[in-house]
Image (cartoon, rainbow, N blue to C red; front, side):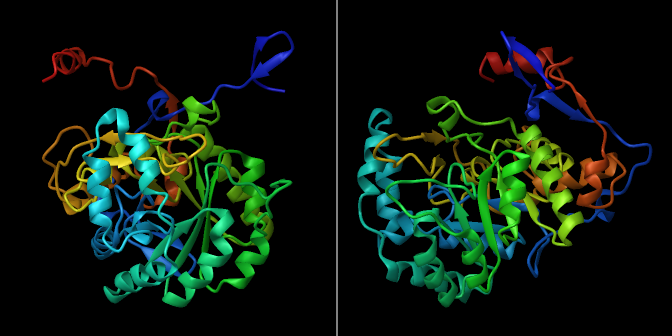
Length: 386
């Protein structure tokens, strides 16, 4: 057994996040304009390997439409404010302007309003009318009911998402979702998340899913790691689950898309996720900063509304530019939060890589000093608040 002793007869292996590693440039370089960054799920191809997270402060129908027209994919939360209120903007404003010490309580109260199934159909049709691919999300307990409504309304992708998803769920009170049966009954691709290990990923792939979200607790607005103590850093998570994808493909001939979900603040983080084996990434906070985001510079974790044990926070990130600037530039900020697609292309060019699948061949080094080495004056300015 690998790893280090952390106590008597107890071993643990080292896991790595984005700040722990760096990518090594290649022996050749490519023009960033000549690299391919598209990805697929089922029969759908997207030119931008970035998804917007199903968070109410990030994605509403207007944002999803704009994201789709720009070549990306935004996921709408079917259990969120958009399906509870005819006028969701008013409810979002109440969350945004609530005092910090009352924000979780306010979110819990607002999410007590029951979901209206007619609004599920309405929101999906609003997006379909704009002729964009539509992806919607809910937890496993509501998936069977909501998926049939979503499919009939014209959704293109259905996402079953929870903090942790496995094929083996035991409960004395509730009935588990049979993912294999669920995938067979739907005519649209199913994306499932979240998980962090090789074994769980491989097991989930055997159910017939088309894509897998990986990561537990890394998001800026998620407090799962603090509240529950569970999670694995995203570089290790992505490498392990991508290995499961590759092994499953060799055995079955079915390729399952891996999407690193959360923990990425910059274009550099996204590049490291792709080099770890991801086909695409899902982010929230970077898009919460867009003018088009419904949260007006705020976003909150999907489990913030949990009545029993909230595992999220309302986070202020501010509004810094348009969605187009965040995806395609021109960047007005130097912090790596804008023109994300050009960051991906430039990184691939420096590494001599022509497509995302080849990113897995890029050499990676353990480099915890990579962001601070030689950056004394930058750090000093940050400390002074400049």
